[in-house]
Amino acid sequence: MNPSSTELIILKHLWRHKAQSLREIHVAIESELGWSRSSTRKTVERMVDKGLLGLRNAHGLNVYHARARKIPTLADMIRDFAANVLGLEGPLPVSNLVTSQVLSQEELLELEAYLEKTDNSVEDNT
Image (tube, rainbow, N blue to C red; front, side, top):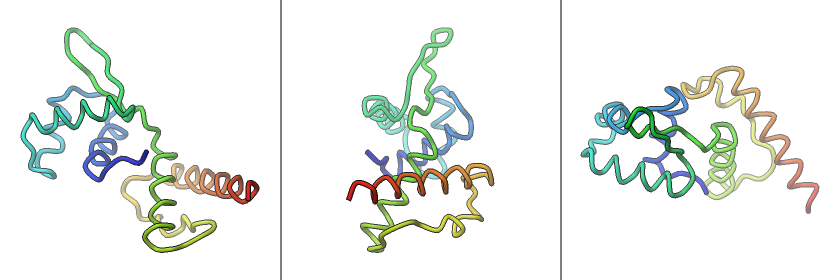
């Protein structure tokens, strides 16, 4: 299941900053989303229920981390957008993402390999 646009904001933050408390997550996304702390809490709890985030207790404090892996999640979202919004089929050129602020050069290569591998496995099954 692909994350919603607001869930993706939280995931991108946690991919960058690893594990954080609810307060740290809220402070980081508050200006972008304009949410109250309770809205952040509800969304984070829903993301835990959906398996997008993991939760552990550290010294009496709930700490959240991304369970959804960055490359497969982004690849699925890119593929879904290309197919369902743009009507594109087949391999997607990752070269269009070179200026991404979310992906490092190494992650771009990993994403390209992941997309190519999963596109080929879909073609093999048809």
